[in-house]
Image (tube, rainbow, N blue to C red; front, side, top):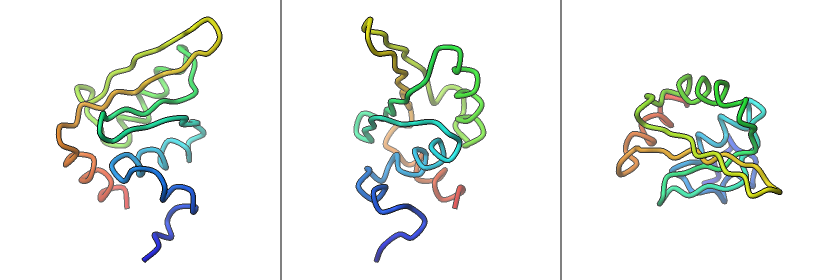
Amino acid sequence: MTDTRYPDWYTALEEGVRDLIFYLRNRGINTTCSCHHEWYIQVDCQAEDLRMMWSYLSEYGLRPEEFRFAYHWDHVHRYLHIMLDVGDGRRMRELAEEAR
């Protein structure tokens, strides 16, 4: 059965991070890479946007100890990794259910 909450291309995203990516993109945050096995999401974001990202992640329901930021700059590209410390993913599934 097709999940009609998402545009078609979202169904190709790994289920563990899909709802959070959908949530962030609906708030104008462009995600560029993700992995639910390593629990990270990469976003297009500048360092000055960290406060906004903190707010969005907290609003989603993540506790501060469940995420951390790693900002990378390779002299050409700047990007932010959001590392999610959510154990086996049970917490992400709970948050996704609450968001529905």
